[in-house]
Length: 241
Image 1 (tube, one colour):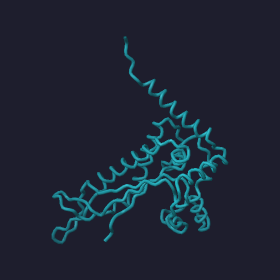
Image 2: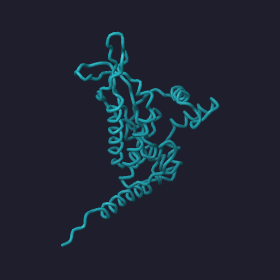
Image 3: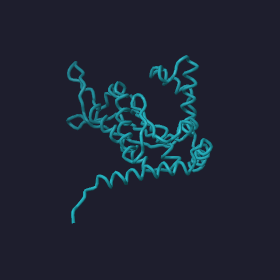
Image 4: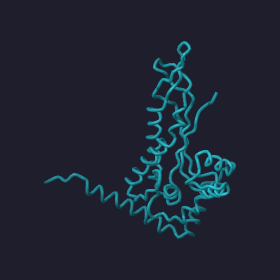
């Protein structure tokens, strides 16, 4: 008997950097909203149970889930990594209100769809905050203005997985989902707890050393806020005296 499933929503590294290193907390709300939208889709379209009637077992959609979410700011390598665990309990109510176990097949089959919905909603939210978006492959994106050098410097976990994939004769673009999961498990470090203020100070020192210092970070945030103000001024209704 499985107690539940964990669907993890991880923000692009540049979003994590701007939220946790640069300190734009608006991005935390955008992330939370994107997670909520994705989980609402999961609940509406993927929640189901198995009903046994006589000798026949059929799948019945239920449209309801019990989900607990836990937001974290770091990766196992203690890099800035904004992500939320959506823990789905193995329980759903059928049309008569009876609690039943979940039929989880859709969670596995539609993993890419769930992730795509989260990233699309997050990209929309980040753009609404005034940031410019640089689109990548498979719906991935980064915030324009966050240097790749900084992203790489604060991505120890990604670097470890990429190194293991290289050792296996493949890379992130060519590897299957199973190969990526094996590489992730092989390089997974034990969880550790560190003072968040100390971590943030270390992250900022790393960013500073990579040419993305406080002045540059603040300028990027200020520019985003200014674009929001300009947009609001342009779209606000005009009234005649």
